[in-house]
Length: 69
Image (cartoon, rainbow, N blue to C red):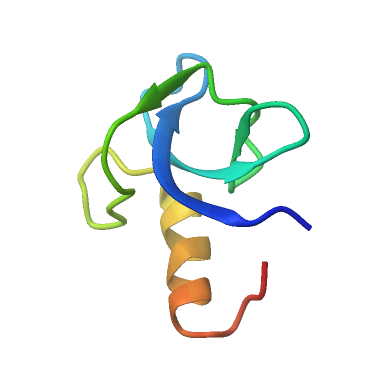
């Protein structure tokens, strides 16, 4: 399975900032929204107002040790 990447990126035009994970080619959103088309600098912040709720939920599960990547 792919590893969570501390980065973030944009996927399509949904308006959310997604947490990213390494894929075979490039990066994908951890929520499954698709391939990242624009990488953003910095780390994904699940509390940001533009953060994808599904990515934030998965990141919280990883942080609590409930989800292994």
